[in-house]
Image 1 (cartoon, rainbow, N blue to C red):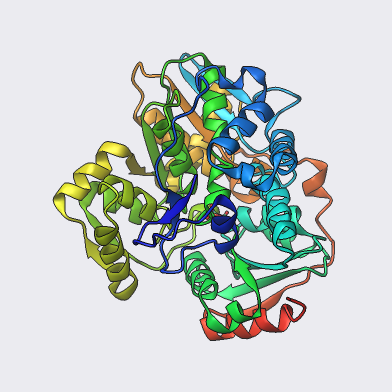
Image 2: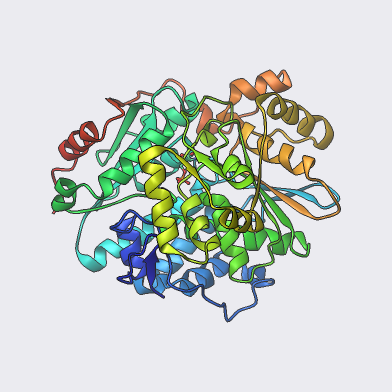
Length: 461
Ligand SMILES: N[C@@H](CCOP(=O)(O)O)C(=O)O
């Protein structure tokens, strides 16, 4: 299994190469050269357990270049982050309606599954090459916390996490800034998530940094990160017993929804995919109105979804255009230059055939948190509420699985406003309050980021 880029990069990287590059050298995103056909039954694939399913899936996508030991370690760690008391965390709300609780890992967000897996895989890839690595990562809250948790203390990795200053929840910030590890640097950027992601993409091809050693990212632009999110679609679909359930996904950088697309593409028991966004709805506008426009992100309660330039939209465009690298490159280069592109009508229609999308207001988000508690007895986070609201609006006889992506105690203020009481927090969250924080601040500027990262990574080979 080799990987190529969405903008025409065709040098065929192995999984290991794609993992350590993060982005293809021409700025495109890595995708498998061809979509593999599993030689195992995906519908019953989780019968042997989540770890076993993950091993099969990782091998299918060529992760075995890193050796069986690394694959097994990765699968074990992702299983530990996924299960709730040893079980698939699927909660039935109603006939044909489930919540998939993806927040039972160490930082109480769905990012833990893939990030726990990325740490042993990255270690194995570096050991094979005898190299060290700088990881740069943009976060609107959950990715950064999960990355810090997974990589803190790693001997071979230095991790720099950029978050929009004052625009992640206090718990998310504490999860990042209170981890005192020499190999981790937290940077608050005077801007929004899209500024952070733009900076990260620029750093990956920055000549001075590249000269100093390997540099990659653990955002979902990295194929390895995204692959770690595929198994839970298959496990949830199998566990529900439903035939081709629809998945409704709270959406920011579009990595999670695209992982669902991958699960379906390789023949998984996955039906329709719906991306639910908050009022930062560039993705919804692109899919439904054919206009992809970059606006400044505004703050919402579902803060991790405050994204206006969702990176994985590029993978969807590549696939929907029939893997047309010229169309993809032109569209995303134009978008980077002007921030305003109109999609060709045939491309828009093709995108719509793959994924639907809708926008949920702040008012509806709050009302849905209340409804989830009163009708279903569930306390949910604002991101989950966005997806549940979208699912309820789409309700038919079709089975639906709503991804519940974070613990409500990561967003206590808004959840308390909605419910009139504070969500019960696990010890891992209450223990954060009062700890010492370490944070560097910086303008939303690539040159400033280069200086910041350079002075942090002087040990690189
Ligand atoms: N919602 C994310 C934004 C980054 O997404 P990723 O999937 O590309 O890592 C966050 O919480 O940071």
